Image 1 (cartoon, rainbow, N blue to C red):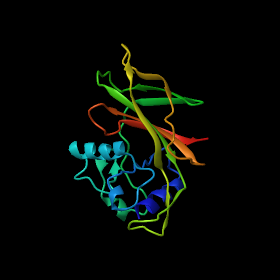
Image 2: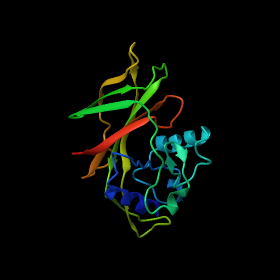
Image 3: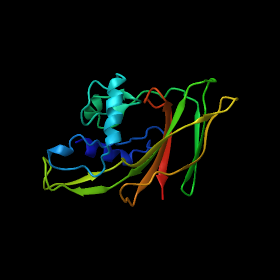
Image 4: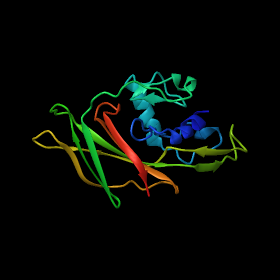
Length: 201
């Protein structure tokens, strides 16, 4: 149900301009007989960190978060509903071939340590499940993180955060349709401050 619900968001006209879905697949169910090809230990660790920061009541799947906070009502929403966005400063990202540069201008000058997250998302990823509870099914996944890295941003004396040049993360699997998503967060809090994204070739 979660995968189907997420996939439908591809056709929402607000995609990229008002909301950006991201699916981190976790590996802690691999032991039951089927290994998720998109799961990474670091993604499981990321979810545990959200729980430790009290943004998630426990570690479970599908663990949905909206703006960094646990979101349990997603099942009851045929259309994605959310409140107005909070002002959070300007995040600008440029992609030049396989190099990403970024700048973030907060609303007020800050000395916080800011981290830039870079993710490549894969779409229409088909998996033929051979074992486990979904044995015999072909699962289709969208908005899946297939490449990810995070980088500490530099802070200028004028209060501008920057990353001058970072290589795109290498995708773990091939995907004919991809998107690039970048977002920032405080080093000590995973909740996103600002985000941008869109389709890439």
